[in-house]
Image (tube, rainbow, N blue to C red):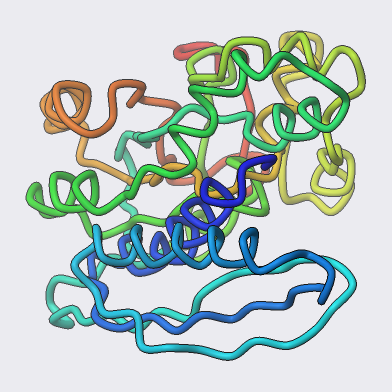
Length: 280
């Protein structure tokens, strides 16, 4: 990010997301920072202020932290939260027939890579707003329906985190490429080579992901493997409650919430990517 305050807010929201993915509530956070001496106190202060404000918004306490000198600015947080074991959501709680609901649009990796190449700042506004938005309220809404399987979508992209859920649950997951909400411009930027890394081939070769040959736009596949920063929550929701949940999310904290797949009892791989709903 060009703005240090946004940088700090996004880093904090990203760190807090792990707590929300388990239906926990954040209690205490500690800063972990590495700054060059020449960065300037004003910039460092704005980064830390962004993190502090986001932690406070989450209702948690920022209890200091640790700072070292480094050539490249780095900032994150270690967060501690609390949840009753009976209320915890994990990767391994999915059941056959569950609908996969994603709460935020994907494509942050592509769009931030494009930002470095000079994409219009106006195109980044919704991306920045999404990344600095907490997943806390969405987590509460999802968990109120008794959902047991949930994760947040971050560095391994939607397909990678879906694979983790499928493996932990001992089931197969089908993702609907055309149903995944994307930021405006993400596909166009991917077509211009702005995807930070396309690891779809590695997953396919390892037998982790199967692609519906000839059906799917390759650019959409890249978007599904795009590494996210402060991405949305991915929840396996009983099919009878999915429409109700999506409506509640869209009316509240997650206007881009969508059904992006389904949990199967078995499949050609832990994750299958098909063109759309009903195309398997």
